[in-house]
Image 1 (cartoon, rainbow, N blue to C red):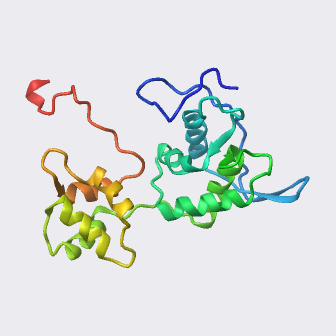
Image 2 (image 1 turned 180 degrees about the horizontal axis):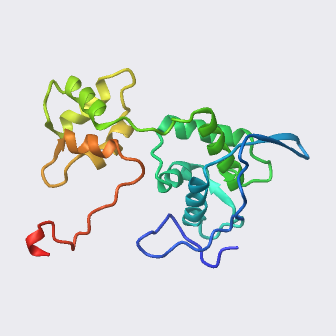
Image 3 (image 1 turned 90 degrees about the vertical axis):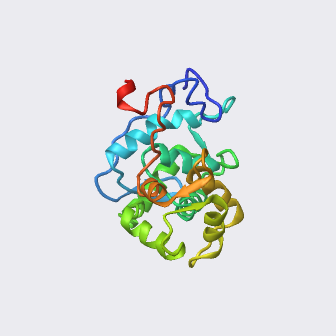
Length: 220
């Protein structure tokens, strides 16, 4: 059980407590185990990824939750990102749907048992080994150059309109608004394509600069 409870991942306030999930060795290959409901396939998962997910899981245990080993559906994406993965909304939806289809009836509505969630991540990666691979900066810049006609910086409104009208799968209003929270430079209101492309090419959540740390070497 957790000694402390967290609410909505207040990372800047308190450190995560010890994970309530038991540390077990993942299978080295796909194995079949027999449970009350019948045979169940167990998928291998990278030990490093498993460790990160289990260490970060306590951030997502809701304050007052009766079951400390359950993950809320809406937290699937955020938890994956804390483990240096950068899934698309489509990938999150697929993992969520697969986990939902295998969830026990005793689990709280709108939640997953952690073990079920982890196994669905493992299954996705076994079936899609490069599923979370990011496009390189060059490929992202090539797409931006085509859509923006070679411009390397544009105002936020123009970039948002481009994302909502260009390509095979244009962004929705909600998706593009959320994207602009990261893409837009807060000081100038512009989107700098090379900087944003570099951000998109990264895995996981980039570290934010320390506002108290001088940006110029001569002031250090």
